[in-house]
Amino acid sequence: MTAVIATLPCTRAEADAAALMDEPFPGFDPAPTLAAAEADDVWELRLYCDGQPSDDLLAAFRALAPSSGLAPMLSAVPDEDWVTLSQAGLEPVDIGRFHVHTGEWAGTSKPGQWPIRIDAGLAFGTGQHATTAGCIAVATGLAKQGTKRNVLDVGTGSGLLAFAARRLFPRARLTAADLDPIAARVAVANARLNGVPLGRGPGEITLMAAPGVEHPLIAGRAPYDLVFANILAGPLVALAPSVSAVVARGGHLILAGLLQPQAPKVIAAYRAQGLTLINRSPRREWPVLLFRKEAPANRRAALRGARRETAGRGWQIDSL
Image (cartoon, rainbow, N blue to C red; front, side, top):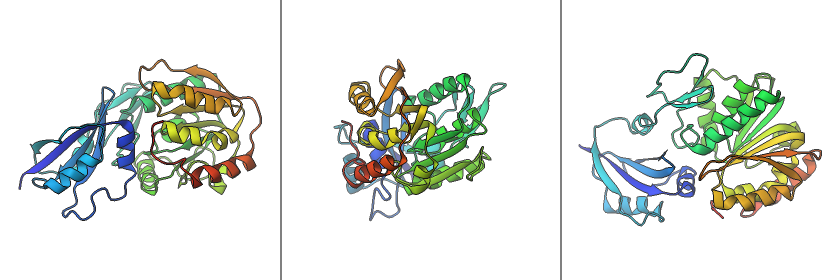
C-alpha cells in the first residue's frame, strides 16, 4: 500500500491549536499522524496516511487550517514510521552556543557547542521557529550579565527553553510547565534523552502539566529572577497579571509567540503590571520582548490572577 502525505499551509495559531488536540481525527482507522513544520517563517500542517486518504479525512484535515483556503496537496512517500518521518525533515539548528537537532538528523555540532536533542512530536519547540531561537538568544545575553538562581518556563512545549536555561545557568532551580499533559510528557522524555536531571534541587528541572502559574508548586517557588513565556499573544495578555506577579524585583521576563502587529497590546498589558520593556528584538515577524521588574513579587496575587485567567477565555487559542 502506498503511503501518502498531505500538506496544507496554516498560521502559527492554527498549528498551535492542532498541537493541543488529543485526538484530531477521531473515528478514522488506521489513525493518521498529524504534525506541523515551519520554514522561512511559513507554517504548514502535515498529514501522514497509510494509503490514500478519504474525502472525509481530507475535509477534517482542511478544517484545521481554514486560513489556507486551499485543498491539501498530496504526494506519495516511502512506507516508513510516520512519527520518525515527520521529524526527519527538521534540519539541525545552530542557536549561538546551542546545536539543536532531532534523533533522525543529528548534524555536526561545532567545537564548544552544546548539543540538545529534541524529538518533539506534536509538542512545539524544536528550535526551528524564530521565537524559540529568539528566546535563547535573549537568555544568552542575560547570562553574560550575571547568573540566575530561579527560572520558570511557562508553556514549555518540548522543554527546549528549560534545557537551554539549565546550560546557561547550571546552578539554577528550574521549573517548566505546560497546560497540555502530552507536552509535559514529551518534555520529560526529551529531558531523559539529553541526560537532564529531573528534580527540585539546583541544576535540576521540575516538569509539570499546569496552566500558566496556577499550581501551588509554581507559586510556592516564586519569586523567579527569570521567566520565559513563549506561547500566543492572547494567552500572554490574559496571563499578564499572574505572570508579572511571580517575577522577582530586578528579575527579567522574556515573552514570545506574538506577531509584530500584536506587540503593542502585549507590551501594554505588562507595562500595566509595572514591568519595563528594556529590549525588543528586531525580528521582522516574530518579536521577542524582554522586560525587567522593579516592584517586589506577589505570590498571593499571582494565584488569584491565575485562577481568574484560566477559568475564563485566557487559554483559548486566539491571535488578537
